[in-house]
Length: 162
Image 1 (cartoon, rainbow, N blue to C red):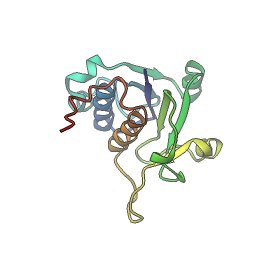
Image 2: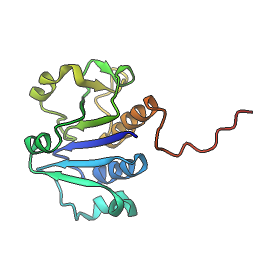
Image 3: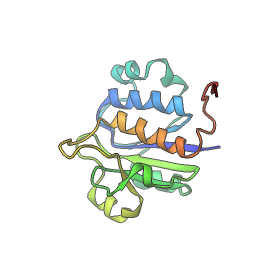
Image 4: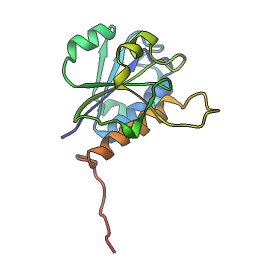
């Protein structure tokens, strides 16, 4: 079984977090929120974007990144950044993985990226693009992880070979 974890470092926009929660629900993933948050967990926009999935979601909160690391010492940590040089489809994801995303406005801290350069991946995009929406990026990377693991644990429907 794949243990997929989505980690948001200091998320700022409740609608993005709500949409990411929906993706986590669809993937059977745990959502980790590292404070400070730019909104309240009770925010109506978070709830609206997360729809009725939010109440079923496995959400864990942390006071800071150190707290997150102390409470989650195991598992592969992968850092998402447009500054990374490794394309997301060229990286080998383990079956116990934490995908770490930064703030919508500035991404992950430069120091964190430099300390983890071999575990930083990016979604390829045109050279003129500044960034992708974080909720879209979470979906893209999550599905790439699951694709590499043959979508183990997900309902892939009936495959018609004819």
